[in-house]
Image (cartoon, rainbow, N blue to C red; front, side, top):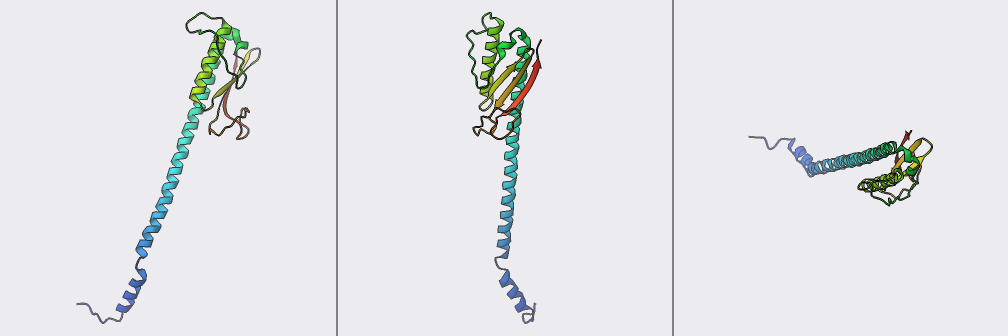
Amino acid sequence: MANLTSPHLPILTRAHKFQRGFSLLEVLISMLIITFGMFGVAKLQLNALRDVQNAHYASKAASFATQMAEQITANSTALENYQLAANQQVSASVNCSSTSCSSGNIAKYDLQLWQQKIANALPFGQAEIITTAHTANIIVRWDQNRNGSSGLNCPKKDNKDLECSRISRVVW
């Protein structure tokens, strides 16, 4: 049987009195640290999702620009009809998918369909095509952050500019 008259017994009971609730405090601090860690992981996940979405937009824009470059090359006799100012809306008077069209009407029809695809696939998507004698500069822009950006510099110079994808095609 234990010796209850030990001189060390009062010291142990005093130590236990001071440690009451200490385990609970350790658990609370651990929970707080884990919570901050989980918030950090969630923030990383949100950033990764945003970056994937941005890469998707950039890929779509490059694909649209390439598609138009190929259409311009296929209809090179109407190069000047592919001229498109920023924010200009094109309306084709003829549906060239069901009727025979001139090269100029095909260009307008191509532009109309292309603008619709861009507007549907990219946030606030728009396009611009600058043509010279044998060159087409094709720019696709979108508001990646959906913050009301409207600047037209490409490449982007500041946060007021829209994101953009630009290609140049020599046409003969």
